[in-house]
Image (cartoon, rainbow, N blue to C red; front, side, top):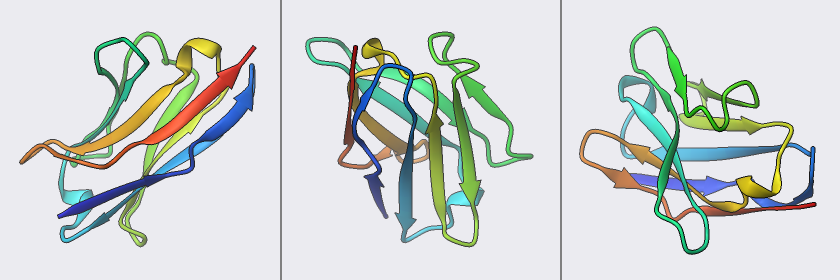
Length: 113
């Protein structure tokens, strides 16, 4: 099982980024997948979940309406579309396969004001 995040970078306030979580060794569409983030000096926090049934998605209040989690089953990849970014979104973003608690290495997102 391997998860590899990509797509992070530096953007200005109000900008957008799309993070990718490429899965290998398993079929991502059959598992609940989550995105988390950890800002400097803060605890890791949950950001979003996409279920393995019906593709239902759930979001932290801090990102609701701005972030969208989705899947591309053909690419075995989970995405996190982030719009209207704020400086407080600055963090390392991680994806997780919930069953077995597999995590990627993370990708840095920096939002400047």
